[in-house]
Image 1 (cartoon, rainbow, N blue to C red):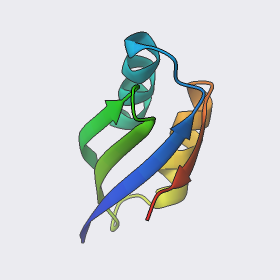
Image 2: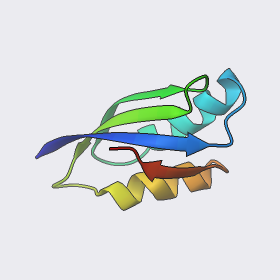
Image 3: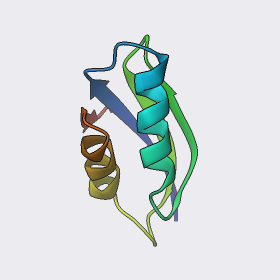
Image 4: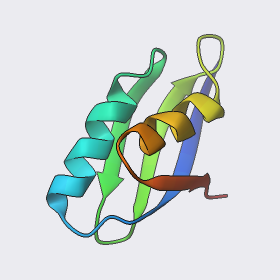
Length: 72
């Protein structure tokens, strides 16, 4: 099942930060249509919940060196 997950990401300061996070999120199996905006501090991912879960996305953001929470 496909689910749009919106994230609030802290610690981003520039476009390079957004690119690092986008790359890590894109590596999550089941993640597609990844968007990250450094200016707003937000990201969105279309997630196939049959393959991955939201926690996988949060771990990917942490792997890039940032913190994220689900943004309802």
